Length: 114
Length: 114
Image (tube, rainbow over all chains, first blue to last red; front, side):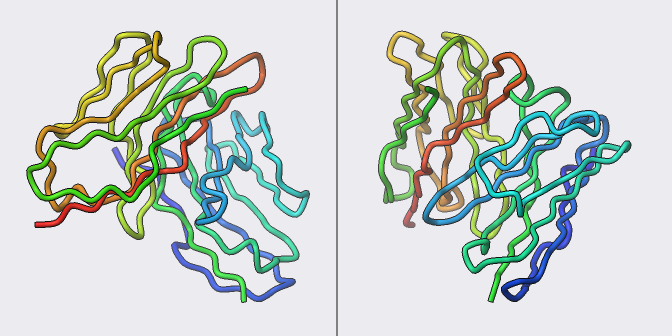
């Protein structure tokens, strides 16, 4: 079975731009969660989607948003990029809801904001 | 609240040495516990898990036992290899009502020298 895939793997943007990251979960998985990883803050939860509905949201500004499609694929969007948004963005999928099933992670998208 | 504390790194060992990375947690209810590993430039890989007290998770020579009485989930390996050099994350997962969480420790860097 193919694992979680994320595209693109690397991205360079400038301040003020927006960016969209994509995540395809493991086949059959209905839950997708997103995390931001930085050297200073570690791994921080962004949001969880299940059956096209946002179930949880972490403590991030409204510039961070996401959605999930009927095939469980998910996208996250960051608008008006800031230098501090430079990070590795990780997507994870699971069969069921976050906290009830094991999360499997993708390789991540490394975003650099200049 | 829920939290995970890992021993500070980096941990530097010689090949074939014994490894212990300490992890303790604070949680309400009965969380599941995980160890994830992150190799340079990659996403997180699930290393092992335990879902209830006294369970032992094991994989690739690594082991960890869910100790509810000491709220610990220490990672051990009898003989490390250079290829085990990576960052190791302890995590807990639980769901309460509509809110699910996967909470990570700060990560412990392991360097194994030949």
